[in-house]
Length: 456
Image (cartoon, rainbow, N blue to C red; front, side, top):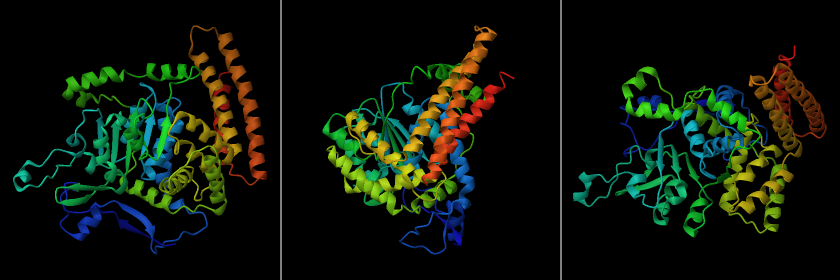
C-alpha cells in the first residue's frame, strides 16, 4: 500500500506551543512526520502488518531495550512495561520498596526519547501550581485564572511523578482529565495537551480510597523488589567498574563550568536516541496491528478465569489492553498479535499483591507456555554464565578453580541449549510462535561461545 508523510501538529494558540510557524509549509516542515497509508480506513486488514518500512526505528527501540537491560539488573520486565506504556500512549506505575531503581529506570528511559519532559517529587503538601504551573499574573486583574504551563505537566509529553500516591485526593483529581482526555482547562479556554505517558513511582500499593482510585488511571502497574542474591554480584560489578554517579552529581552542581568542559555524566548515555518522527511512526504502526479471532477467544477465557477469582475489570480497561497487545507484538518485531503477547496482562489488572500473583498464574497458563519455559531456562543459564564470568574476574581464585567454574557453566549451558532446541522443534510442530525461544537459544549459544574462549 502506498504511503505518504503526514505532519503531526499541535493545536495553536496556547502556552503549550512554541511560536507558530509563519506559513503552512513551514508548519509542515517543523512538525514531526510519520508514514501513514495513503488511503485510511476505520477497519483493519486481518493480515499481518508489514513492518519492513520501520526497520530503522524498530532496530533503535531494540537497542534501547537491550541497553536498559545492561544498565539495570533484573529489570527486563519493567523495561518492557515502560516501553509498552509509552508506545501505546498509556500510563504506568512502578511500586516497590525504596532503592529498587524505579526512578532510575524512568530517568534512563527519558534520555532515550526526544520528548518534552516534566519530572517532580510529589508530597501531601504539593500544590496545583507545582504540577500545572503558576498563574499568569497579568491576567488576574481581568478575572482570568490562566496558568503558565510551559515546562509543567500540561505542556509535557513524558511525565514522571515520583511518590505519586502522596498527592492529595483533590490534587490527584485535577490530573484526571489531563491523563484521560489529554485536555486542560486553562483560564477561559481548553487546551489540548501533548501528553503521551505518565509514569508514577511509589514505595507502597495505595491504601486509601483516593489513592486507589488514582491507581486505576495507570493501565500498567508493576511491583519491583530488590535484586536477588544470585544477581547481587552483577549489581556490585556494574557500579564498581564506573565512576561514582553520586559524587559526579555533587561536582556537576557545584562546578557547572568544569562539568560542561569535562562532560561529567551522572547517568549513562543511551546508545541511540529515538526521534519524534520515529516514535510516532511506531505508534501509528502499532495502532494498526491486527488482533486475530484466536486471541479474542483467549481473552474470553481470561475474562472468565478472572471473574472466577472475583477480579472484574472495566470495559474501558479491556479496550485499552488491546493497544498493549499490539505494542508488545511490535516490540517483538511482529505485525500481528499472538499468544506471546498475552503476557502483558500480568501487569495490567491487579490492585493488590494477592491479585498480582493470581493474574500472573492465569496469564502464564493462557499465553505461550513454550515461550515462558524458554525464558525461564534462559534466565537459569544466565545465572550460570554470570557465575563463571565472576569467577574469571576473581583474582583471589587460583587458575584451577576458575577453570573448574567455567567448565561447569559450559556444561549447564550445553544442557540448556539442547532443551531450548527441543522447545523450538515443539513450537514449530505445534505452529506456535518460536521467536522468544529462538532468541533464548541465540543468547545461550552466545554465552557458550564466550566462555569457550577461556578453556581453549
